[in-house]
Amino acid sequence: MSRFEEAKEKYASIGVDVDKALDTLSKVRISMHCWQGDDVLGFDSDSLTGGIATTGNYPGKATNPDELMADISKAYSLIPGKHKLNLHASYRITDEKVDRDKIEPKHFSAWVDFAKQEGIGLDFNPTLFSHEKASENMTLSHPDKNIRDFWVEHCKASRKIADYFGKELGITALNNIWIPDGTKDVPGDRLTPRARLKESLDEIFTVKYDKQNIADAIEGKVFGIGVESYTVGSHEFYMNYAAKNNLMCLLDTGHYHPTEVVSDKISSMLLFNDQLALHVSRPVRWDSDHVIKLDDELKELAKELVACNALNHVFIGLDFFDASINRIAAWVIGMRNMQKALLLGLLTPNTQLSKMQDERNFTELLATMEELKTLPFGDIWDHFCEMMNVPVGKDWFKIVKEYEKDVLLKR
Ligand SMILES: C[C@H](O)[C@H](O)[C@@H](O)C(=O)CO
Ligand SMILES: [Mn+2]
Image (tube, rainbow, N blue to C red; front, side, top):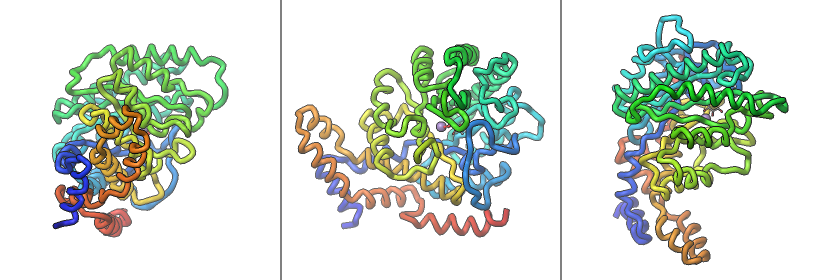
């Protein structure tokens, strides 16, 4: 009997259908963020500014659309299944001199062609940073209406592009708005910027689209670089705005207080919202955007998504940007870790755990959760990689190193 068959039998003995788990996992599209490929620079600015930063200078980052597409394609070839690509507006591909408020679907047609070639979906984000009109850490809430209007137009243009992605690819595109607005030190007025933000968002969302093509999210944050004392778009602001306007409040795992975990928020959000959007990241002491590891919080977050039966109505996006390591490896490690965590959740006898809890059988609940940790999960994961025709174990790493030698280091 193969190791996989033996492992499958062990999981069957605790009531887990491995084939069903693998089939479910093979259909989960994870949104891989383009911005890990070039340290969030994009193609329309020459520096990353405005409340977001990367650290490290690992050689060979992508410097143009062709290089970025090649690196993304290489990463996908090492990741099981078909997924989505998460784009920012700053990655428009055009020879035109076009400012952010004037971008159009045609400026992203090359990405649609790439998506069709790769068999993936596309998600989108307006880019309200790395621009002279974002230099004061105020955009949609800026006191100057001209600046607010510029960013409102940019967000409107972005939603139109997301709708275009959804139409062209037949896969709903998430359009997620994050703004860097806030103050470095204690603000003199918390209310007025938030009232302006509400007004700007109200204007942005006046345009209605087919929800089959585009899903809208807004992303909160507790603090940022240069806005340590106050962020206009706080979690409370966006959770309320999203609930009242039937949008999604996107949860980024790096955007809360150090002892706060997103895994605990998922069931509450899903009780009141049909859909949920996530940015899965790894904060180290702050919103550091480290590559995600298969750690306890990632496993718990994934288990919650499975236990809440949410895999068909959650937008799982990754959001990290480590410039100190090979960027293709960063994508592969992060994407495969997200899949491993989801598989662990799918191999968990969640119904049994819930029953033990209701019966106040906390002793067996604890014992079961601990024993699950030593079941042969790795044999199931290796089989999944074989099924999906991607390298098993760390075999993908030498392929990345060859690509680094043959391609990246020659840039
Ligand atoms: C590049 C993304 O828009 C950015 O990381 C945002 O999602 C965020 O999390 C900012 O802290
Ligand atoms: Mn994020």
